[in-house]
Image (tube, helix red, strand yellow):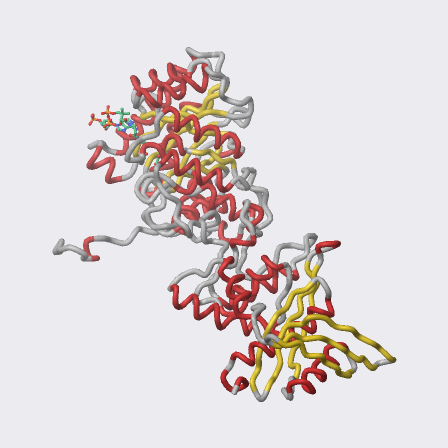
Length: 558
Ligand SMILES: CC(=O)SCCNC(=O)CCNC(=O)[C@H](O)C(C)(C)COP(=O)(O)OP(=O)(O)OC[C@H]1O[C@@H](n2cnc3c(N)ncnc32)[C@H](O)[C@@H]1OP(=O)(O)O
Ligand SMILES: CC(C)C(=O)C(=O)O
């Protein structure tokens, strides 16, 4: 076999388990698992610059605020900052009553001893001991056979137990990880764990945690689920165990693998916020928690403080959050494309507070995580009429009639294409004002009087025409048609009203009226909007505004 670059023959398929009795595909997740954050350990060990004690303190504060009850706080036998941080937690009394710290250590005596020193005085601690079990680790890293690996595990388990006896005031919980579990023959993984379980003799009352890692994700999540289900079925004393899962994201499926592992019988999930961790990262707890939340399951974690989560993770890891990161990214509740905007706008208008969320293109209500609807719809050259109309609605507080949405779309599209980028909400308003609300023009309403007899309206109005003042008289079934009649008589220009809508803006003394009109003058359509504190004046002014727009066009002026 040649080992030239980019040659798939270098690799082989992952062996699948021939498991015909799999039950997990028929299961559903009905409640949140126990969560354990490993941000301060696995997340931290993957950083270019590991967190300082101050950064760890900040991350700790966030994790507690979010509601984590188990937090792996470090590998205290590995480095002084890890050790100091753990000491600070204990000596400065920073660990709430309902939170348990967890610490990781290799199955090596001197490291285990140092680890216990680090956590001395804590109320309750999970001591997490591990050694690697896969064939490549056995053969190439440890140069040991299966029995040699089992011996490391059992000796480590025994040492963890004997050290614990030296600190009787702490409540100890033992956790063992067969590191590289997912790449280990599953029967052997069971054997190694059984040796540890045999050493610890856990009970229903005092359970041990067996943590099954996909240290490097190398198969599809269904294979992992088969491994977990097999393990849960075969391991000794299952009811005295908490089965924990620790997946990595090498194939991009860490969350999927963790979810399927829950279906397959696991109880607990380890991961990090936004998925920081070795290589492509650890399983992202925020994503998995939000996946549950969006299915109506209480995630038992507070993700509503999304901006705080992002700010803290970024400050502690020096890694930016991708704008399309699941659930929390800057752009994940934003629609630029026209048909999406149209659907979102229509659904939001119909969404009732007492009904289940049912909005196209928005899997959750962005307000749940502190995002406003303002940022949901943004306008660029892909947006069509709905987006600009939505932004204008947000700013003016009125729903534009469809015919005006269509009119507005054109100048917005032109601007978007010219700018080659986003059109800001302020610009939408500016374009709207410029195109439809210009107060300039030959004719301006100076005053009016209306007499009404039955259905007949008689309008007498004064209209300034450049430097002159015209006196207008007209009749019609309404004030506007009477005024249009008067203008026709005065100027000879026939105005046919095609569309007309009115809206009130604001309330009380500050209220004003908006009149929106499209007319046909000599075969051409013209659109304008007028605003006035007096609703009739707004209606008459908008006729003149349409006429002024028409006058500016060469064909009418001529
Ligand atoms: C998948 C994971 O994320 S596991 C966690 C990994 N995290 C870290 O390693 C971060 C912190 N670690 C460290 O700072 C260092 O590894 C230390 C300080 C703990 C130990 O450093 P060192 O003493 O230099 O040992 P190192 O970690 O390189 O391990 C090498 C030796 O330990 C053995 N070893 C490694 N892991 C384990 C284990 N889990 N249990 C028992 N022995 C182990 C190796 O076989 C090797 O033995 P050898 O020297 O006889 O060949
Ligand atoms: C120590 C174990 C759980 C680990 O971090 C891994 O396998 O990724």
